[in-house]
Image 1 (cartoon, rainbow, N blue to C red):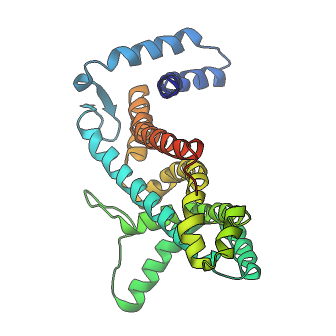
Image 2 (image 1 turned 120 degrees about the vertical axis):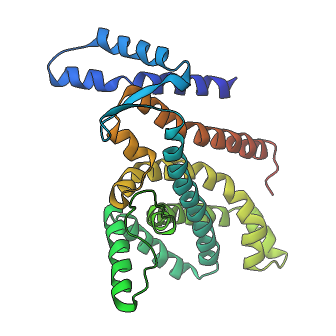
Image 3 (image 1 turned 180 degrees about the horizontal axis):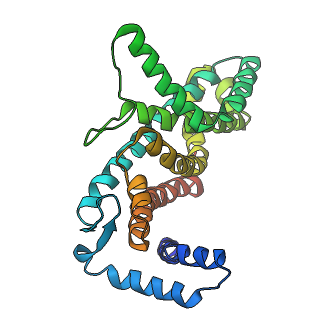
Length: 287
């Protein structure tokens, strides 16, 4: 029931947000266009069925085009970049966290201080430095390791994924460090050490499983942070993703489909994850 209520409430909020440009335009003109706003919401609902008949004005092509199935190619590409970046960020952050937990306390504090500094670097700077590094490497060796912009129907993956995952990985790395250090102060860790378990065994077999619950819930903020950076990434690399597609075809229908295409997989993933980790937590399966 809680899952369904959250899902329905989220859908209603997304639907209401699809008509916000009408209200914003009214505020700019000094008007409160509530009637036009609710009429827009009604028109969006009516236009969603049948979905195969939804058409939009493509301003780049200057002609009306069907929304489906063409939009799936843009959605798929953006989700591929986002998914690969999330996996890379989570895996890298956890590996670095485990390795850092093996260090002495003094070195750990130095790592945390460095992470605080690195976390403040703008995402735009990371992208520009990555592109400049590729250009410099090409000039030095004549080897082009990756394109720095998409032309036509080309697709590039590893460089956009790297740029998208760096700052979220640093953020998740720091949060994971705090979580693991909190777990290190628990009684079961002292008990494990008193039994003669090494630091590596204690971290990998005991602390890791328990810390994953907190890391999972903390990763929500990281995912939304990555979503906010995706627009800048697609703009800088000229990626044919859904964010730029929506920018070029800014209609309530495209907004609704765009938000739902990201909201649904993230919502389902975290709903299943919450059910699993909360069941472990309250089922007293943590050891």
